[in-house]
Length: 487
Ligand SMILES: C=C(O[C@H]1C=CC=C(C(=O)O)[C@@H]1O)C(=O)O
Image 1: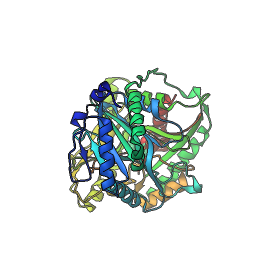
Image 2 (image 1 turned 60 degrees about the vertical axis):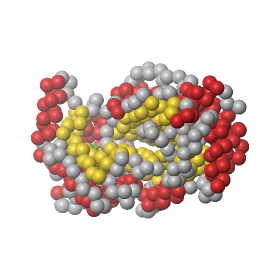
Image 3 (image 1 turned 90 degrees about the horizontal axis):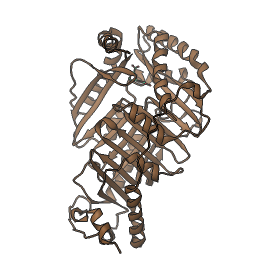
C-alpha cells in the first residue's frame, strides 16, 4: 500500500476526477484509491478507453526526464521555449496514427477528436499543460518521393508519459489504457516508480562543446553549386511571371566520428537559441528530427490565436553599431520587405477565409536571434470555437516563408530544383490539447539525425532582385549555426 510520505508528495487532496464534460468531482486520499475510483468510473462508461491523469510535480528539467526515460524504438517528442520558461517531454505512445495523402490533416483531426471522446480526464486541472495532449509531426509534402518513409506524412500520438515544466511548476500527465487498470495494484507501483525516476532525474550537465565543420566528414558540400544554379533558374521563372516567390533549400550530409547525442545537442540548442523553439521528434526506428526554429506556425491559448510572418534576413553584426546598421538596412530594403509582405498577405487571407479576423501591426519589426536577424510581424486573431487548430495548420501550411507563391507552382518547382526529400524540414511540428489549445512550429533550422549521420537543412526565400551568392551566404550562415550545436 501507499505510504504516508508518498501520499504527501503527490498532494492528492487537490485531486479531482472529471469524467468527460460532466464534472463529477471525487476527492481521493491517495493514488491507490484514486486508481480504484478511475477503474470504477471507467467501467460505468463503457466507451472509455484511456484515462489521463495529471499531477503537480517538482519542477524538474523535462530534458533530464527525457534523458532518464526515453528509449530507442519509441515515439518521443521534445519541445522547449527557454525564453518563456516552458518545456515539454512526451515519451512513448498509448495510441498513434500514421497517415499519408491530401486528407492527412483531416484524418489527424478526426483521430484526435475520437480519442478525446473516449478519454477520461482526471487530476490537477488548474495548471498549464495538464490533460492529454496529442503530439504531431507532418512532413512538408503529403506524399513522399521515392517511398521515403523515414517519417510518414503524418504521425500523431498520445504519449504514455508527458512531463512539462512551466515557470516553477512541474506537471506530469500519465495516459493509461483502460485495460491496464484491471491490474491497478501493479499499475499503481509502476506509476510510483515513474514518479521516483522523474524526481531523481539528474540535471543535464551542460558541456558547451560547440562543433565546427572540421570535426565532421562532410559528405555533400559539393552540391552547393547546384543550389546557386537552382536560384538562377528560379529567378528566370520569376522574371517570366510564373512565380512571385520561391523558397529553395539545401541539405548537407555530415558524418561524425561517434553517434550524435540528441540530449546534449538539444541542451546546446536551448543555451544558444533561447528565443527559438527547440524541438526534437523521434520515430520508432532510431531517427530523430531536431532543431531550433524561430518560426511559429500557430499558438492557440484560451481561444486566442497567435501566428507570425517571418521572412527577410540579415546577419548579426559583430559590434552593436554594425548590428544596428544591418537591422536598419533590412528594415528599409524594398526587396526584403516584398519577400516579407508576401507571407503576411498570405497568412492574413488564409485566416480570413476560415472566418477569423486577423490583426497585425502596420510595419514589421526585427527578430534578433544569436546568428541572424529577420523581419517579423506578429499576427493575432480570436479563434472561433468551431474551428479546430488542425484546420488552421492545414490552411496555412506551407506558407510562402517556406514554399512560395503561387503555392502550388512553388511546390512543384521545389520538387524539381531540390535533389533531396524535405521530409520534416519546414513542416508543422507541434501539439493539440483537449481544450483547443495548440502550438505548432515550422521545422526550419533543423537536422535529421541517424546514428553518426546528420542531414542539415536550410533554405532562403527567392524573389525578384535576389542574388545567388547572397542566398548561398544566408543558407551557409543558417547551416553553420545548427552544425555548431550538434554533438
Ligand atoms: C526557410 C527558412 O527560413 C525562412 C524563415 C525566415 C526567413 C527566411 C528568409 O529570409 O529567406 C525564410 O523564409 C530556413 O531557415 O530554412
